[in-house]
Amino acid sequence: MKVNSLDYWVKKNLTKIKESNLHRTLVEISSSMSPEVIINKKSCYQFASNNYLGLTTNPKVINSSISSASKYGVGTGGSRLVTGTSSLHRKLEEEIASFKKTEDSIVFSSGYLASIGTIPSIMSKKDIIFSDELNHACLIDGARLAGSKIVIYKHSDMVDLKKKLQKYKSNKEKKMILTDSVFSMDGDIAPLDKIVELCDEYDCISMIDEAHATGVLGDTGSGASEMFQVQDKIDICMGTLSKAVGSIGGYVAGSRDLIDFLKNKARSFIFDTSLPAPALSASLKAISIIRKDNILREKLYDNIKYFQSYLEGSSHNYLKSTTPIVPIIVGDERKALMYSKFLLENQIYIPAVRPPSVPVGESRIRLTFMSTHKKKHIDKLIKVMKKLEKFSN
Ligand SMILES: Cc1ncc(COP(=O)(O)O)c(C=O)c1O
Image 1 (cartoon, protein in one colour):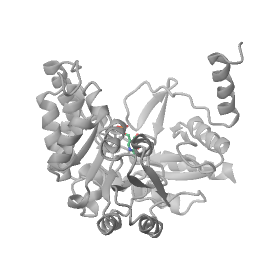
Image 2 (cartoon, helix red, strand yellow):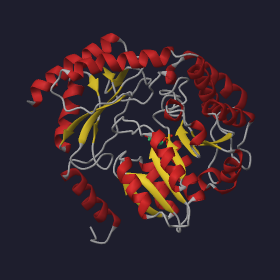
Image 3 (spheres, helix red, strand yellow):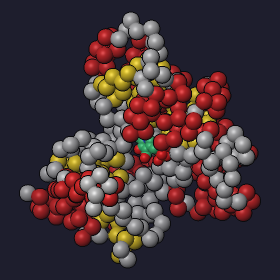
Image 4 (cartoon, helix red, strand yellow):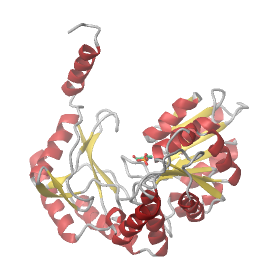
C-alpha cells in the first residue's frame, strides 16, 4: 500500500482511534424506539433515547403521519425556496412560534442545520461569540463557520462569563452569548435568567439551543425559556423536533424580521431539500399533544424521581440533574465501554459516551428516561445498576 494513499492514511488513523478505545460502531435496533427494543435479535430495555415523551410511537402521531403521507407523498422534491414549502411547513412554523411565544419561526431539516445556518448568517469575522464550554457541537460548528472570535466561558459560570464580557466591553462589533438551555451530556440547565441580564448589560445577542428542553421543561413544555419566564428576552431560540417532539427537523423561533432574514441568508435552509409531509404532520400532532396536557411530562418526572431515589443511596458517581438526562461518570473510556457491555449482557441498553462527545477523562454512561418507561423497566435497571456497583468496586 502506498504511504501517501488514502487507504494507508485511513487505516493508520482507524488504528489510532481503536487503540484509544474511541472506535464507534453502529448498533442496529430492529424495533420501534420504545422502552423495550430488539438488538441482535434479543429483547432489552433501553435508557438511551431522547424520545422523552414516547411520541415517536404515539398512535395519534403515527396516524397523522400516515394520512399526511397518503395526501402529500413522502418527499417534497425541492428546497424551501423552490417547490419545498407546503401549507404544512407554514402551519408548523406558526405552531412553533405560538408554542415559543415569538412572532414567527422557520423550520430546517434538522436542529444541526438550523444552528449551522443561523449563526453564520448573523455573526461574522469581526464579531465575538461567547460560548459555554459544554455547548453542543451544532453551536460550536455554527460559531466556527461564522469565523467570529470565539470566547469560551466556564460551564454555566456567570462570574467567568461576566469577566470575559467585561474584557471585550469596548468592542463595537456584534456580540452573542451562545448556550444550550439543557446540556445534552450533563443534563443540567443553563441559568437563562442570568444570561439574559448579562446580554442586556453588555449589549449581546442571546441565542439558546432548546433541543433537550422543548417538550420537557416549562408549564406548557415550551422549554427552559418558559421555565425561567424569559421567552420575550431571548433573541434567537433554536431547537429540534427530533427529541421530545419525537419526529425530525429543527427550528429557529424569533422576531418576524429575523425569520425573514434567515429565509434569505441561511445556507442550510436555502440549499437543502425540505422536510417531507409525514415528518411535519408528526411534529404538528406531537406539539399539540405536548401543549394540551401535562400527563406525559408528569409521568416522565415520576420516572426520573423514582430512579434518582435509588441513585442517591448508591455508590455511583452521578451528576445531579433535574432533567431526563442522568449521567453516571466513569472516567476512563475503556471502563465506560465495560459498563455498557455489562449492562447489555444484562438486557439493558445504554451506550458509553466518550470523547469528543464529552471531555477526556469524563467518559460516562448517559441514561435517559421516557414517560413510557414502566416501573418494571426501572426496577430491572436498578437491579442491574446494583450489580454494577459491586462489579466496579
Ligand atoms: C443540544 C443539541 N442541539 C442540537 C442537536 C441537533 O439536533 P438534530 O438532531 O435535530 O440535528 C442535538 C442533537 O443531537 C443536541 O443534543
